[in-house]
Length: 136
Image (cartoon, rainbow, N blue to C red; front, side):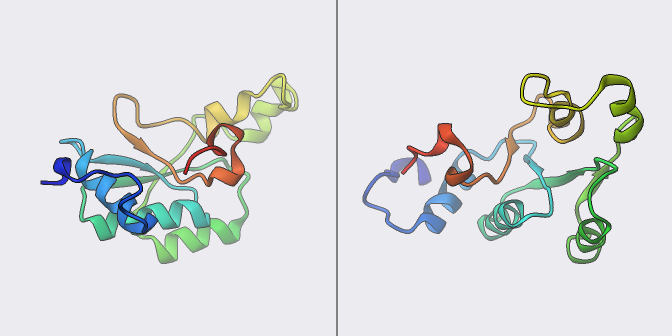
């Protein structure tokens, strides 16, 4: 059983450790994989495939992403669902103003939506996040 295997310093391979964690914590309804088309989300999708776990991948359309990214996802990751916002980004920004550190409205509404009540899997490297920098 996977629950009997300790995930500590005895397993050095981070890929295998990730696959084991995905298997062990797989929810009954499968994972909600937040997919951006970047290398981090491509990696986590690949790990989920290797783990053989159930998941559905979702790309939250921002309406301002580069067309090359959208074409890449459609061509190389055909199983990813495209979730469109209620309103395009630019008209929303015209009303609310530019987002900035003290008023970060856009990510919450355009990138971080979806997966409510589900186990959401994202691919974020520890080098990109101060809170993750101490993860081993």
